[in-house]
Image 1 (spheres, helix red, strand yellow):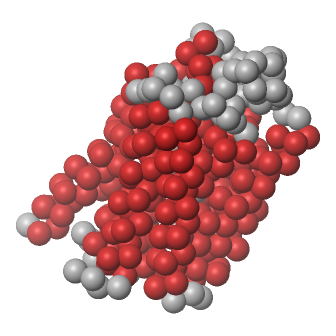
Image 2 (image 1 turned 120 degrees about the horizontal axis):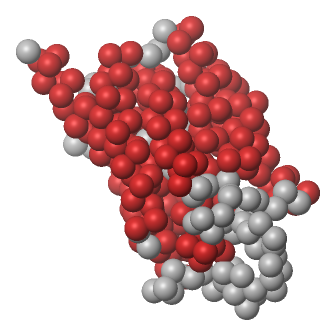
Length: 294
């Protein structure tokens, strides 16, 4: 009976995780790790491994929805994912020999940094959802537009291009930045046990000037690729709780589809506030659990 109740709870929690995953492009690991630790009683190694296992099908569901809606940059997602896959295994190995408190502390620090970055950009944006640092009137080229027109507001690109194919200007600078983002996200994904979206989304908005409505789906595409090596390695190490992972996926997969469909209806600025707030809460939960503050 207890197993049935626990499974139902995980499915219901999974729905919420899926919605946030599809909408924010974080894969869901940022939420799953605290949930599995606090609610399911898994240790740090099992929680991170199980989270990584569940991330792939959840991200796949959200990514397919974004691709169909043309609300992402598929080729950029592939580039980020391939770069991340290179360092993912190194993160898994280092995580397997690190004390659990260090893994959770690293996760909290990285998550807080990402939350701060996103919150700062959200506060700088006007009520219309434009960021003065990259909006129209600034010199330079918007890398998130197909033609790189000067004076284009990247935060309005999503609305202006809903019916056009997704594109990204693959200049040397943009490719180099994308590779660096992927390498960082891949290592963090393997070490902490999350998809890497909590790093990729803020860095894509900050370094590449891409609106968050485009980063969500792009991040999910990358997460699918970069998580695969880590999952294989974690499976061989025997750290995955498959039942917990599957139960989360049962609810999270349809949730991710719904979340991806909500992206066009949510203002850019609101998405950033939600993203920052979610990460801040996740970091607090990790610290509270690890240091037994409750």
